[in-house]
Image 1 (tube, rainbow, N blue to C red):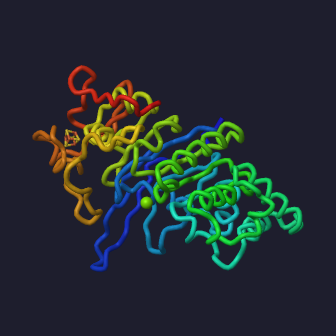
Image 2: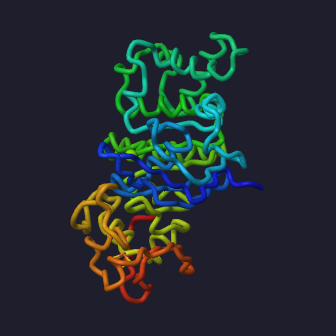
Image 3: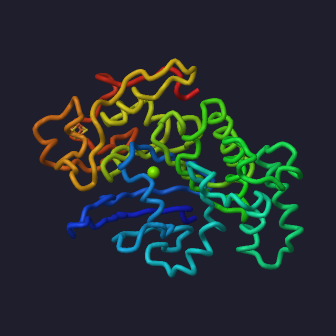
Length: 333
Ligand code: SF4
Ligand code: MG
């Protein structure tokens, strides 16, 4: 069977005001099987969001997109806008960080879910669609759904609004849910509830998910596979357990060090420095100015993503299990 999502050598370039092109995505490969959860992790500017925005055709005009992104075997890159609009919001649902800006403030949440349903299915009556909205609210554990569908976005708390966003994304029974920083705006307790909800929905509905986050801890408990991105490239990729327990890439190790423990005692270790802008990306391994292991080849040769047994890793000096394996105590609880 074809993967749900299959991304091959996807490249995205933007043009600066001075006319110079810069690669925001330097050719990445990712794939996702139906019903599985892929976590894409990286700091801002790593390219993690634009990869998804590219194939949903949500990037500004003039962006250069090359390579391939197939959804259930169908090529999305270069697809006619009318066709992609049919897929977006139907077969592929999206959840964003800030549901307040995704909702229309002057329409009730029920109306908005009804519109989302009727956009893709004209045969369903408004009344039936509202019933369906209530059912969806119940599915995402919004209490008193019959009353809540009649309320406006500002009448919902941040966590409840995110649940409504998820309900809307599920309105047309998607096979794939793309969630970009779905819990970043929420406090820790609510964050955990939303992640639990996503986990349950995945079990119940068999939906495939791409969870995009800067926080490795967010995906640790729910993702089957993790791709760590830095400077427009995937630097490490693999099943969740080996990414955590047989970490090969120094950047991933740094992120794990920076993951707060789940008991809330705070960060263990931070990576120093800031991620590069796409217009001033360091040559060779883009991570080299921040890397404690950098050696002679690092500023010169860009390391390729190679299979290392446990994970695939792009580094000239991958961490070995015996030397500096990072073992965060409770991350995978
Ligand atoms: Fe560090 Fe070099 Fe590996 Fe890049 S290639 S992560 S600079 S050791
Ligand atoms: Mg982003």
